[in-house]
Image 1 (cartoon, rainbow, N blue to C red):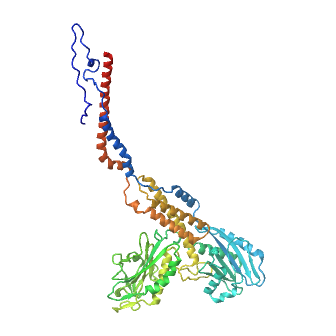
Image 2: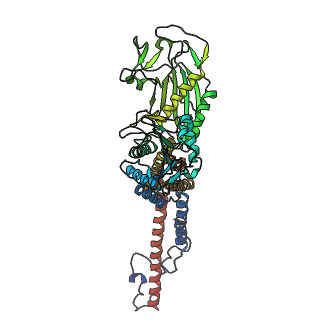
Image 3: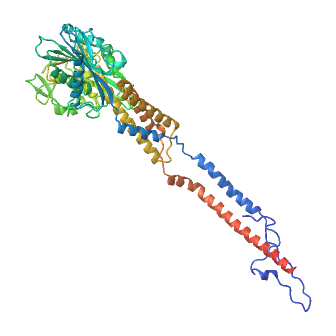
Length: 614
């Protein structure tokens, strides 16, 4: 560092002549160090101030550096996430509901007032003996006994709205569909207050032989025939638990509640993509009127499933789409046969360009439903079942992917070379039958049975089919299971996000992420409250929203776009820029401070020697 004027060491004073006979004057330097001369002037502080100012500027700039490299972290409500986990684990979502039994008696006398109370106790005891569904909460039981002489009800809190004398045993002759609607009007099911009460009606017919069970498309069923009280109580309990609570899924069967059947995107969107595949257009070309017929049949299905999924419907026609599996000719069956072992290789992903949806955005789920039209050399093509029988629908499903139906044109036969080059359309009736099969496959993909057998119970059973593809009691089942599954999935995602944020101290957490987490927690709490009230559809809507918000927060672009490093890596980035300069400035400041102290000591020694000489 350059020397500053006035701070250099002064020259030694000239020697003083001594008088004869006197001792030479003592040299002040001899009292101190003989190597360092004394300083006669006070040392200046300019060099020290200048060096200290440079060091101070570095120290003052350090907070600005730290502020400019600060990581923004919006606070996450970790306590609220922990509280949600405690509530869901200690008290899993369950939906209370009611069971109302109605006995329509053929007698003319007034019903016994104590009979309804006795039947209520018997039905409650019967329900205790049957394993309940995982999503079933408290079940309130009530009984109404009606005859020509009036009605008698048990003192229960179930909010049933049964209207006496609206339905009689004589109405059975009108048909099951008409009787189903009469029961619906008598129960006032359109009122939301009683929408979670399931009703089983016992219609006594004295001259009937045996019993017959009919499961309606709303939230009720009825048994017609000559029934004693013990048998009626048993049937009521089994129908309620087996169908209304479990959807007809037996123990050990695959279905809803028995595994992961959630063909819904994490954002709550589903795209149903319907494709008509012409394997070889040189043989024949078929088209369909999907916009006219397909959407009319599928729109009610999409509306019924709206609480658990936002469904979009698309259709397309593709050409030159051969299958990738092999089939063999069977003269006995009169066609080409595709065995069950070849089904996994049927879908030709190289030639079938199915993923062309413009509605599938983000994390939406696409379910493919394919109508495959075989070429002339492999037509007709049949699907063979394991027992050497042929499939009635000639279709199969692939879980979480969709379904395939093999459609043989009307004019194709084994060994026939008949082709046509003109474009034809599928007949309207055939298209409707095809879509009905696809609706059954959609039911399977959601964990329900495609259809029910008439011998599922100990007595002949019939199921009234809904035009929406799903009955009301089936929709309640879907709502309950999807609400519970989405709540647990939401909790898992939020816990993973909280753990990730805490494990990476330098992770950026935007305010939008914090807001999405708060909204997800609010929606999850609302879903829990609706579940405790038994409002399954509203609970499913809130749970779907909670899961979608949690997924949006976890997969936010700001979370995935930066590689978060430790504090050691942070210092390794900036140390090469600031360490060399800072080290030299610090060493210069220390050196200057030592020099100033040494010069100060010389000046102090000079003052001390002057005082001694005087």
